[in-house]
Image (tube, rainbow, N blue to C red; front, side):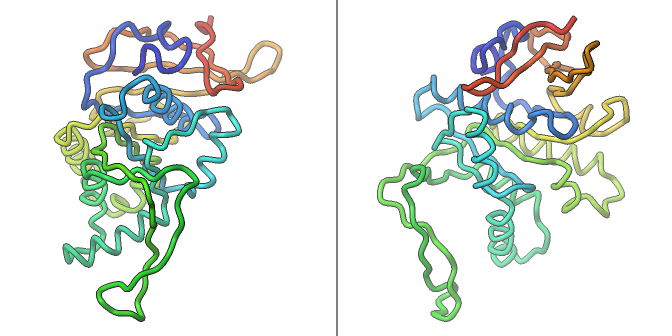
Length: 265
């Protein structure tokens, strides 16, 4: 996945991270964190049989349409094997989850359930929405998607975008964030899915419990050149059980998504 999914990544990675790793994608606003994550997974899937890799991408800050539209403008290929669940879908699922388990604000278990359950892959632009009775009440209807040709897949990759939004929902009043975060990371590893967690941050030197709990940290950032122009870079802060460079590399967006250009000197 890492060595060849994005052009030039083989300059950074010599070996692949183990499956089931939890990887933090960090950076300030506008550094292409979401685009990098989706591009990496989408390109990797294009080179693998459909029965090997599937992904659930949970975005808590954008709608699915907005996210996909942004990716398309960068030339990133959109994969029907990446099931995007946006904030509206997540909260509808949260309501259903609460009614089933009888527990309010059980966001962590809902995330874990999404990270492990088989799901239906919807052919892109080939579905329509209708309504049906909910809880056997004809007056209480919910939207459902009717699809003619679907396939059932069990996810191997899970994306949470972003941890900032998730923290505000789950850990806002927690007295022991490190314990809660450790529990989340441990349970994600138990699901044997490779997890990408997007996080917006401007200062990696500040202590944050997730920095020590994850298996890998990929930093995306911007740097000002001598000519007062800004360029984007990618740097692997850590990646357990993996051979990789720790130097920053310039990245750019071309007509086919992201590309690693050269080492930043």
